[in-house]
Length: 403
Image 1 (cartoon, rainbow, N blue to C red):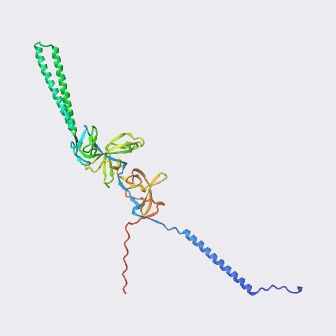
Image 2: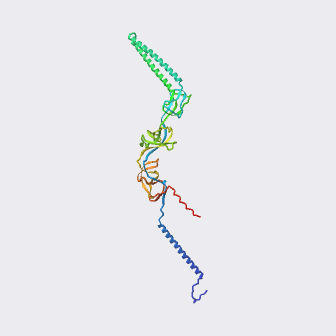
């Protein structure tokens, strides 16, 4: 294509529809930018307001079971022990003679008095022996009587010089031998009579027949066990104790214990003796505690559990062991004071493990409320209230509207 040199240059014409479309796009972009900028500015403003607004304070609620009131009371240092009961006085009745048991007059569980007849052994053999010894005694006495008469006659003859002194000395020796034979025969008679008495088996002490080991018709010999009699008025407990606690244990200290089957009934005992030697293996020392059992409710062999009071403190502030907290070796507790949680460092004293209490020597006064529940995250100064244990009363119902 050829362009005339004298032709004028005119700008290219743009269609009207295209120009309108571009204007619309520009306006839409401008509006979008304005909206986005407003949103960003609003979010920044809201974030600043949130940063300036403080967090809402949380108030802790404690149930009555979560708190404990610091009391003033005396504590005691105790030593737990266990053992079995046994009668202090008990006797095994044995036969002193041999023979057949004719009668048995007592049974287990019966109360017997001292000297009461328990059994009878046949005495036919014993009676025969007694008769033999009595006869020997009579013979010995007769010989002594003859020897005594001969001595008197010889003394008269000696005065008349009819016999010599040697004859008189011989009669004196014969008389002394006869007297010795009489004494020997008398001893044998006494033994036979004692055997007759021993054939009657009697209770050596007053108590209860615990065991019967013989029946009628059985043959028994010397030292055969026949009965066991126990006296339940005084019982004894053998209880092992650690050797480290022995310096604090003294004769006369009082112990309290319970026995299975008697519920919450508490019995008392007294330290009667302390074994001077430790037991091999356990290295424990045996304590012997006497127990008065006048009503006879305690029986031999019963297992007991109790504690021995070793020391007592004066009345002072005590707190539950569950309330104690430890941080870097410092013991402290949390208390509720004026609607706030407070922290108190305390100094501990004697512990009473059985009651779950510990003495507070300093740092806390009686009447304070300590947090005994095991809660985590408690901080001094936090708000806290005690929740009432009683339920709130129900709101009264509104009267129904008419028609």
